[in-house]
Length: 436
Image (cartoon, rainbow, N blue to C red; front, side):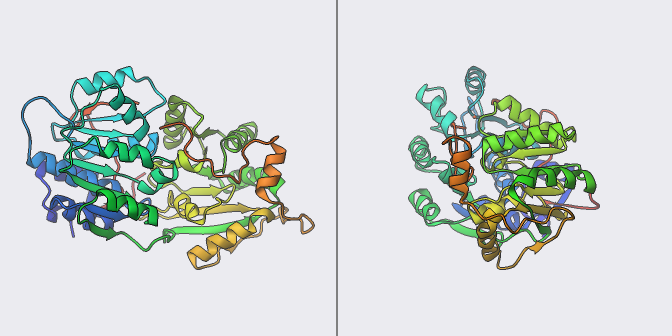
């Protein structure tokens, strides 16, 4: 199937061609016809499958097919869990709406609210927002949601993990009852199904791939190493193997900061992103990582949601996640859109049970690769991650604890879809050769 067979308007097909795409990904091929038909949609899509274009393309098509006159009102509301994902989704809207006259806006917390108020007053067709900042605007009566025709919940599973369920329900009460609803989630837990049942009407269900599967193009390896030697091993791996773009995951914010500092002292350009960083600092670090100024970006799980980098070669689990499904999300940052990637996990004796849980989820063993001079000391005993970390940090929340969402996630970026060529996105299969 080609994009030209999906019934999209010429302006959107032109934007797709501008990006070099010809063939939709499986989730796009399934979701786009459902959205075009006006049906509610419940879509299960892992990261890296092109789900964002799976809803932005048909939504833009809907707006193009039924243009309205008079003052601009928000016709589409897209909710995302994090600032980074919100910015990524709005980039996709601008990319594929480049030849259409619609205006989009992204709002999230951590930045000044006044520019957002001005942009909202100037009129917006498509609003991408994090729940907390959107409710701030609603309480101040800065935003009118009475004209919303399409409501999208993107990465709904992560929104529930971050405690946004009550905010979501409050927002649903602010939009018209008659509307189209789209829900995208990497997993369909009982909580997600309950949420879907509360506002989706006779939805179509689509699934891009089997639940909790690792991307096929990701090569996975484990290096067994003592907990105190992980930093040294990571430095050596980056240097010896010539890794030039590495996304590294830690469990906690202070762990991310400490590791980034260690890498900098070793002469490796690195930075950290997490919930305590200002939005400007997070945006700057991500931009520097994408353009090659940073070799290593150290991130917590929540901060990394929405990081979308074409052909990212390496993901490192500096610390294994407590929840096995999060491992799948992490390594899904590489091996995307038909390109190969590698996921490396540095595993100490404390994390062997976590590794076993991951392998049980994947239904396979991950290859353990010995590294010279870094074989683990068999005399070192496993320690509970919670107890050891809490004691080491004087009673602070331990690296083993799930940190939740931190402060409420929303910057302002209002653009007309036709104003300039925005960054590529969407995750569709590129035609022709690989591009860097």
